[in-house]
View: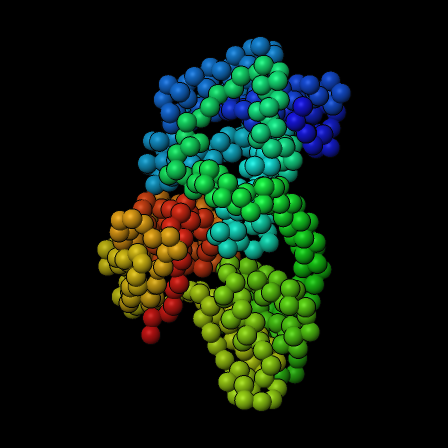
Length: 466
């Protein structure tokens, strides 16, 4: 029988098993049926028909309903037209499916129809996720991969559990064959159009030639990263209140809170920053940027730390004692004799009124660069994975009613105004964003998730236009 993380459950818990009909979820259902008496669980089944594969999707639903009937379990079923929704929202099928599925999970939990929903993410899924994020340049928090538990939005009941993360897909299929349990095969799992499928069927097998246990090694990396991140978050919660200072220092003591710095700026004393371990130093400056609504990549973090380098003596004293750098649009850093300051700033707009019309639209070749005088910006775009045919151009523009974006490491799309609020940025009618292949892949001051950008390895650098 596959290994199950029984510690995630408590007696009397009502558990809905998210079952697609595939081997992993069917094995999870059968395993929980074996354990429900000794764990004291009340089981049900949750299945979403995404409507992507036509009759094949309908057959999956019938298969899951037959399982529910066979084991006398109440089914939660929902049908959605993912292709139509993806087209209307300019999202990919995979991303739209995931978002709709999890939105429905939270809906079931909010209605208190069950206490927990369990998903059949396996060790294979974990290793694929870690490798995919590693390729994208994730920090430690990203390398923690799929979490064993996923808490709901604030003040909402329920929880999502992943009790199969220590179990491999091959172990699951071997067990199902041994007990004579059939399952459904999803033909889309071999479609090379999806990045995860290429990682699963091409990249991981190639890496396994160097280390046959490579999947388990990536899963171990995720477990280590999860514990490391938990430790660092606790340390930052303890240290940041004394390290991050509001505004700027003024003569006679105290801090200034004028319109330029005020509540939209944070300062760190240079000497205190220097005395920190490099690992903590990076965490502190990234946390400061995050509080100002920006997400720093490795290069920006290193630029910021270099700005805070020694200037007490030597040839760098004059150049560093009073320096400023634009790290990204909406975030600027300034070095003074005693402090490193980070402050958010609105995008410099042209004096001509910008209302979201075509006057504020610019075509950006991918790869390439474009200057946008009305937005006060210059954008440069590069790709890590060139396509066999030329990429279409992207459009740099101001946001429009109905635009939706997905924050980095998030699953649900948001209105632009809500994304700005969550990123602690002012809500403006002229927020610059970049639309490419039907998705918003970049937005001023906000780190976004994008399937098309990730697939191409798209990197966008924005600079103020002189």
